[in-house]
Image (cartoon, rainbow, N blue to C red; front, side):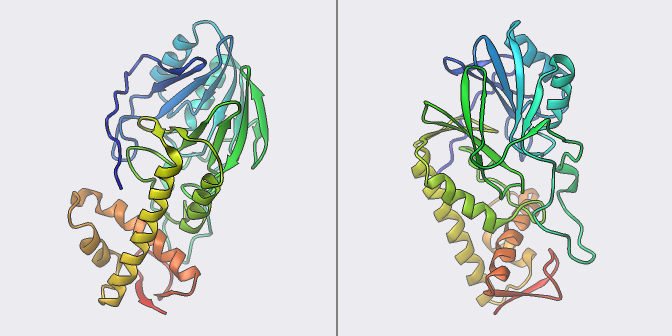
Length: 299
């Protein structure tokens, strides 16, 4: 599938998406964050700040400067990775605004015996919203109404938000134009992610405002491509098992030979997510247990 990596973060300056919707990109670039985390300011006279990002005081000051005296009446958080939610507490200290959105951080499943969560440091375990939103909940603020769309997969508590009266959806890290989303057990879950893809395909929004990078346009077609890509990756993993490549490093070497080896650990987490899903469907077995260093075989 084709990704769009053309993006100017315009650090320190708001980018107007349309009247009442502006984007600010935090200066936390990296292999998983692209140019940085996108914060969105919704509204004109009263504002909602969506995903204030990591605990970067400079970014919080940029948000306050962009508000230009308008009241930030709510802080909306999509999920609890440290590049999205810790900034909410800093912004709350400055504004007194309520923190709403996703619930506390949690893994998609319990850890297996002797298993270590490879993304443990990425979880914001201090997040406690003043109001938790669940699937279908409506949140009215900043002269807008937002519908909560539960999209677990990237994290267990991941939420998207549809902006009423528009064709726009705040897609956070579930769907991004620059890259596929990482799904890494036990933090995330591939079966949940695929079900959430189907949730978005059942909706009508065609423009997504993602957590990193530029807008996703013609979103339904793009999400269909994402689904096709994931299913093709699943088929490729099954083919590798048929060829007696039975460990995650062996599968990664075969399927990701054309990418930077520094990204192989992340690719291994994606392969692990697919294998976990395949095991749950009794198509694959793991020995001695479902872990990153297990041996996998077709059932």
